[in-house]
Length: 79
Image (cartoon, rainbow, N blue to C red):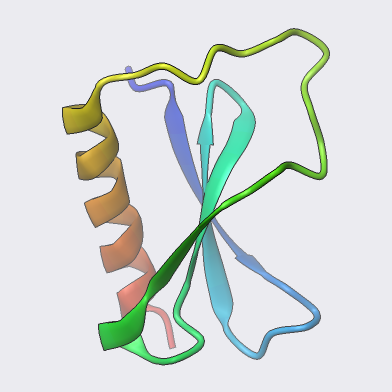
């Protein structure tokens, strides 16, 4: 089981969905397709919320790249 999760969310300031990637419950980054499917941007967040326990943001690069690709594809398929 992966420690990563992907949530598709809407932002009141945006007209489109965002994909939030979290690691062990702590939000890590947001994918944004404001400029279209071919120009998806990633933003590493200085988070609005922090879990009560410290999460070490150290993980497998291979697994993170797989999660990024999955989040990008899920976001791309959303209108």
